[in-house]
Structures are given as C-alpha cells and as structure tokens.
Image (cartoon, rainbow, N blue to C red; front, top):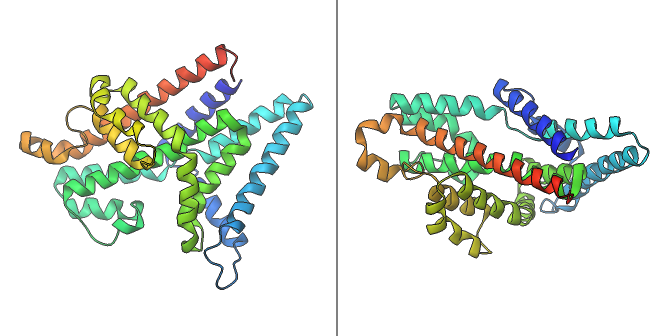
Amino acid sequence: MLLLIFLLAYFVRRRLDAAGRFDSDRLFRGLFRRMATTSPGDEHRTVPGLLLVGGLSVALAGIDWWARTRGWGLVAYPLQGLVLVILMGAPEWRGVLRAYREAWQRGDMQGAWHHIRDHLPASERGQASSPDSMHLSLCRRFMAMVFDRYFLLVFWYVLGGVGAVVFVRGLIALREQWPQASARPRFAAIVEWLAWAPVRLLSFSFGLAGDLAGWLREGRQSLATPLALADDVMMAAANSALTGYALDPQRFSQLHPSEWSDYGGRSLAAIQDLLNRSMLVWVCLLALLVIAGVV
C-alpha cells in the first residue's frame, strides 16, 4: 500500500506542478507569521519553530496511527496521500525555468538573472555574475529544491511515515521562511543532518540513472567524504553522471561556441531527465523492498 500511495501522490503532485498550482510554502509562511512569537533577544532560538512543526507531525502521526489501529484504512491511506500531495512539489519553478531558458536563448543574460535571482540563496542575490557561475548557481539550487521537495520526503516517508514527512518538510520551511532569520542556520544544520543518508543514496542513483562509468570515476568520491554538504554531493555526482558538459558551461562554450544560445535549455533538460530517471530508480528500489516485506 505504501508504494501505491506514493505513486498516486507523486503523479498528482507532478500534474499540479505542471499546472503551477498549490504551493505549500504559502501554508507554512502564513502559519509562521501567525504562530511565531519571539521575545527580543531570543531571535536565534529554534525551540519555538521545532515545537510548532513537531506538534503538527505528532498530531498527524497520531491521527494516522489511530485510524489504522481501528481498521479505518479508508481514512488513513487517503490522508497519507493527501499530505504527500500537499507537501511535495514546487509549482513556481516551472515558470521560472521557462523564462530563464527563453532569456538565455535570446542571449539576454541580465534578463535571465532577474528571472532566477529571487530563487537563489540569499548570499548570491546581491549582484549578477558571469553566465557560467549564474547557470551553475541555478542548477545547484534547482537540484537542491527537487531533492528537498521529493527525494528527501520520500526517504523519510518510507522510514517514519506521514509524521516524519510533516516534520522534515516543516524543517525545510523553517530553514527558508522562519521570521527570525538568525535562527535559520540552525534549522539548516538539522536539515543537513537529516539529508546525510538520502543525498548519498541519490548520488548512487545518479550513477545508475546516468553515466555509471563517469560516476565511478569521479562522483563516488563524495561518498567517502562524510562531512561534504548535501549540495556539494549532488553537484559532484550529477556532474560525473551527465554527459555533454551539462554542468561544465565553460568547457562547453570552448568546444561548441556556435551552440551556446541553446546551452541553458539543454543543460536544464539533461538535469531534469537525470532527476526523473533517478526517481524511477527509487521507485524500483521501493518496489523491491515491498516485495521482500521490508516495508
């Protein structure tokens, strides 16, 4: 049942993302504005945020457990699917990437920068950069977003159920939207810890879904670096698993200068294909676990 719930929720969520509908960030943003009350001098505290998302996750896990123990699977399983549909996905990115591709193809790098800068980390929003570094920043942020909103949630759904999904997604929202900015790095550190195992599993999935020889030659080295950040692990693994210099714009521009106007779109398409194939790898792995009776 777990595999079926996830597959149904995943396909529904992808349709919603394609239509640009239902962004869960708005729910968390409104919740934090109403519930986040901090005394002066305590802006760095993480306890209020942790209690808020922890309370939500415990409440939802309790409802799910109560329904299943009463034999009300018709209530529990649709509830799990609904939670996954609500918390997964990032519908605003479809329009952002389309506008970025079009601007890149026109050669309007300044326009491309203005389309994406609000979606980049705060440290990179202050000023425009070269097309190479701008594109790599976007690719890093896009892969991190897909990992956070899909792969990370799937991993913890399998391990901890719907309550774990709510808690992890809540932490991601705290890291990005908690009103007291001084507390966000602490939330980010917790998310980084929760992402340690799943991002390395994703790195291995990149090898299976992409250029395995290239990944074995370079990408797997990040697995032996336990302190490497999740974004760095993903970038190294994706760069080694992709062909055609999809994550090496400088090298591509040297070898194929006449095709530079198409590079932005081709690179993003290659990354999206790699992520989609990697999700298929995860679905197959989950199916094997279900057949073996592990989950």
